[in-house]
Structure formats: C-alpha cells, structure tokens
Length: 383
Image (cartoon, rainbow, N blue to C red; front, side, top):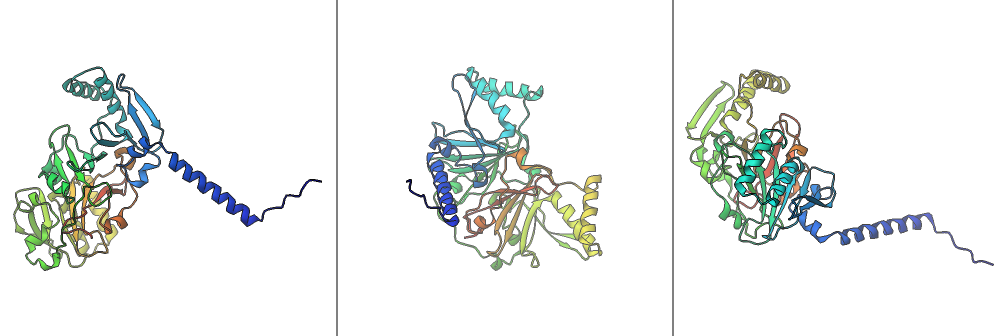
C-alpha cells in the first residue's frame, strides 16, 4: 500500500511560493553580468532596470547588445580610461555612425565633418537641445559623478548660465553646474553630482543662515554661483502699482529678486523670465483669478506680446528651511518629454532633503516641463 502524502495547508503553500520567488529573484540579481551592472551605475535608480547595455566592436564599429532594454536610455561598459557613459536612445543613430567612422580609421576632424553632413542630409538627427548624458569615473582626480545636458550652439547669456569652471569645487565634493564650449556644436551644461556613493569624497560646507543677511542685493543673489553674483540685476516688484524697481543694474541677462517673506523663496531667472511673472502679478493685483491670470499670460506669450521662456534657460532658487530643497536650480525644457531627452522622472525630493538628491524631470510634455537640479553639499544646501 502506498503511503498517503499529506496535503499542505493553503497558507504554507503560499509561503513556500513566496520563498521560491524570492530565491529566484535573489539568484537572478546575483547572476547579473558584472559588466552590465557596472555599466548601469551612472543612471538614477528608476532608469537602471530597463536600460539597454551595449558596446561597439572595435574592428567594425558595429553595435553589440549585452542586454536588451525597453526604456529611453542606454549605457556602454566602463572604458579602459575609467569612464562609464549612458545616453538617451534618441541619439543612438548618431553614436552608431561615429563608431563606424572611427573603425574606418577616419581622423576626428573627418568624423565630425561626416556627422555634420549626415545631419544636413537628414540621415542622422542632431542631438536634441536638453538631452542628458550620465558619466561616472573611477578615481578622484576627475569629477567622479557627472551628468551633462547637451546644448548645441547655445550661448550662456541667452540661457542665464554660468561659465566659471567648478572643477576644483567638484573634486572637493561641493561643485555647482557650469556651461562649457558655449556657442559651439559641443556646448553643454556640466552638472557635478555631490553627496552620493559615486561622488567625489568631500565635506559638506558649513551652513549659512540666509536670514541673517539683511542687504537686499547680497541676499537676492545668494542662489547664484560666484561668477554671476556681481553682474546680475537686482529688482523688486510692487504688485499694487505694477512697477518694477531696480535696486542694482547688472551687466548680464540674469535678474534676481530679494527674499519673498510670503513664499520663503529667493529667485533668479533670465531677465525675460520675469516679464511673464510680473504680468501675472499685476493681473492678480487687479483682481483676476489665478486661472484667468495664467490664461492671459499664456495668450500673451502665444501672441508674442511678451517673451517666452527660452529652451534650456536656467533658473535659481533658494529656500531657508529644511522642509523643502534649500538650493535648487531649474532647467527649462518647455514641451520636451523624458523619452526625447533621456531624463529620469522619479522624484528625488526625499533624497535631496537628505543632501544626496539627483536631477529629475517634472511636467514633461507641457509648456512647464523642467529639470529639477538639487544642489548638494554647499553652504546653502540641505544637510
């Protein structure tokens, strides 16, 4: 007579299933190719799981897939010189062409000429303004964790951007973004990422209490990097009269307003960016509802009566408490999507409040689309 096999209680059966699934997941994680794992390191967490990993065959320049993904970013394994790069998939055709041309033995000048010609004839799309690249480096003699926003042919004054190098500050773990190669096809915004496990080792600067600074000009320019502080215009706005009052005339396109006691913010923008904000404030003072005021401003922008926010322009914001991001820079990308630019969209607010936030995109696909850039480890940052 065969032995009777006892039935497992339903709860035990479910428990065994959960254990087996967990074991399988752990095994899959442990068995992931270390080359793939390392290639994904430059990405924020929300982009890693579904990113493609590839490399180029050195002889042919052809792409070889190491892991097929289905999101809008892709990464190459660490190179012999210590760099690991990730890119938006929207620029894949351009990079593939470059790899094939390099494999053919063309010089860097010839490669650049061929890529430009391909863009002109439409066979390769140019890199979209605002597209994001991600980079890590494995030694402390360079910026170890760096994100790069591509801004072909743009100039700093049009975008209210700084150009003073932050390399030394970044190596010390306290760098802020700056623009390089303005006005060229290779123009870009360098965004050193401080305070994370991949960042340069450094101490957080002692916190400055902005409330102790009473001079309105000094206080208004606190959100700016040093190379913009002395050249920015500082103004106030009287909503009851609709008058803009200049406290200091600057020589740049950046304009700042002193601390607003109601909102708690100190803000700086490209001077054109204040036009729509001032119009909105005047309309509210005249009794317009917020919706009607916003609609009127949008109509004025559409009609060309007031300037629109330039694509890629940078704004600066300071807040004096720990319940919000203290030092935040904002890159305007109106109408753009995360897929087009290769950007993450998962909020980094909590990480930013803890001093280790990375950039993320908000309001994608709308006129208000922007990249939030929390600035970590400076004298004005969250601890």
